[in-house]
Length: 383
Image 1 (cartoon, rainbow, N blue to C red):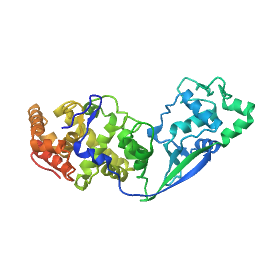
Image 2: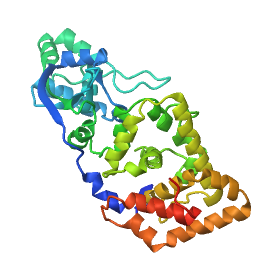
Image 3: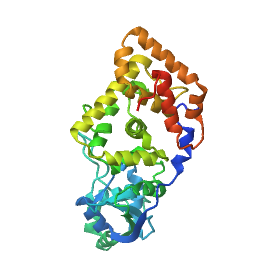
Image 4: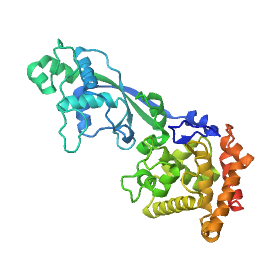
């Protein structure tokens, strides 16, 4: 099985390594330049026409770096363009690349810098870190307006080259995956679930990683023990594992690689499920997590260092498909001990090991390891 670095919570699945690089199906995309002035961009931001997706909400630039950006506009220096995605249905502009630049501009125009912190007042935004001889050293937007009308007007009318991307076909927003992957220059490759959290917001996403613990499956105490950390993964890889379980449990017979496309379609289909449907999902997941902890103990899928997602997929789904058997036949200490022995036998099975560690892109490898897990653990393959 693939090894994983000590600081990585999840082992890579060899058979999906190549799939993760596969581009999703073709799209009809329209992209065009839009030369907005800074004054117009700030106005759109204030009216909510420019939206920062959840995965990009953190503002990371220092005041010195933001100041140098503003100075670049005042000096007429070139500034890298920003990229927007035109959201279907709302016509709002989702920021794909350029969050730090846009936020720096908005903050300077507002006179305050940085995020709001409870109990603390936001600091004034004056241009800092510039050369002492710069005419803009330690100047604010308001002082610029009062003392240097020419530069004030120049700043307001400065153009930040923008590119707007719009998906024409198919009639959804799935191409944003490609756009984030190819255009984002933030220095950190975005994880699939971070992007799904942005474009598939809705009742199902709220169940996976919502704001209230009562509905948030990722906060389930048994799940945290299975994942191996009390803290939620900042890149939402733990959330993606929950999604993988639901997708494979309900739709494994229709699985087609790549896995990321399979997960996208499942999340899109269930994006706005009813409360009753979501309650069924929640009960199934919580009952399965509780059964896994009771029988296999904590961190049962950490075969080497991190959690082995292929083993998790097959065993967790096998448990979910056999909850009735677990209740009837494995409620005693002896029964639980017998099932744990079967699990250890599964991990020694050569065919199973090949299915969870092979780099093959065999279309049926996911189903093969699932069927084998069900047969060895429970003696039969349930639907």
